Amino acid sequence: MRKTILSILGIVFIIASFFLARLIINSNQRKRPAPEKIVKTVFVDTVVNSTVPITIKANGNLVAKRRVELYSEVQGVLLQGSKLFRAGQKYRKGEALLRMNSAEFNASVVSQRSGLYNQIASIMPDLKLDYPEAFEHWQRYLDAFDVNRTLPPLPEFSSEKEKYFINGRNIVTTYYNIKNLEQRLVKFRISAPFDGILTEALVTEGSLVRSGQKLGEYIDTNVYELAVAVSKTYANLLELGKQVTLSSIDGEKEYTGIVSRINGNVDVNSQTIDAFIEVSDPLLREGMYLEALLEAREEPDAFSMNRSLLQADNFVFVVKDTLLDRLKVRPVFFSEETVVLKDIPDGTVILNRTVPGAYEGMLVKIFKESSETTKPEGSE
Image 1 (cartoon, rainbow, N blue to C red):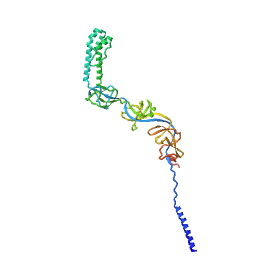
Image 2 (image 1 turned 30 degrees about the horizontal axis):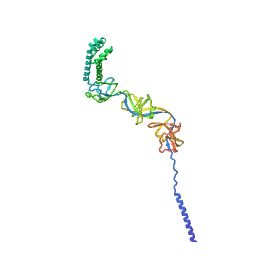
Image 3 (image 1 turned 120 degrees about the vertical axis):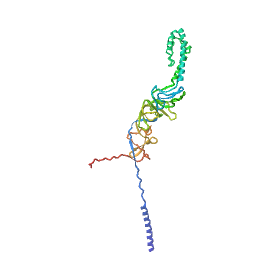
């Protein structure tokens, strides 16, 4: 009996120990907390479609509209003039840029004129006898003849016989040979074709200048041109005479120019078209780097936004209630920082800042600036 009781108690103890152990194990199990829903705060804009001006940004270096490369057509020693032939020297229109020693050539021209005078004088007796009607005007020509001055025009022929007689004495040929030499004599002096400044001087006073040698460069400082390369896509947007805003590279100064010329050819390599903008300002200098804003056209019923917000396949993220959604849009113009879009309904709430890891259906909260109202003193 005693053994039976002890056996039953042992079995009860074992069963009780088993349930107690399970109770202890179950009590040590920790419940995993439910994950909290992450709601990101986003910055948004409400779309209001309007007319957006399309502006093409381009840049380039200023070049003088009128420039002359100076070359010598004759040979001689460069003489010192009233101004030194140096870069930065200013000249007025018609003023001598440089002069070369022409004494030897001038003596040759004087000798040729003297020979012509002798030729005409030798035929005067024949003219008086055979062509008395022509004698008087040839006599007046000889009386006014000066070997140190440019030849005056030959007298007009009064008859065909006189013409044949004069040509037969080789007078006309000699006359035009001398006129050719006189034209060459003028090239020993180079005059300023317009008011401007010398930007390059490659010779100095006393140097021997050879025919065909480059002497320097001369520019007009009143009008400049800026050549900008515009994509052929926007070629139809350019118009002659349209005003253009130009700004310096630091953005501190602005100038106003006009589109003066548009190249008719497309560059094969870059697929761009050169447009030339004419601008005038006393502060401008050749070679300055300027940025141009070409107002091409105005796009009605459009919206402009940062181009980084435009997703692949022309989608943008919009906020509907508290969720992100994707909206198909139609971009019509890209600049360096912005994109002009169409097909966005008015009142659409659109992101105006990128959200890392954004996806369709993402839970978001619109950021709203909170303003604290300050109560006046003495109020409760």
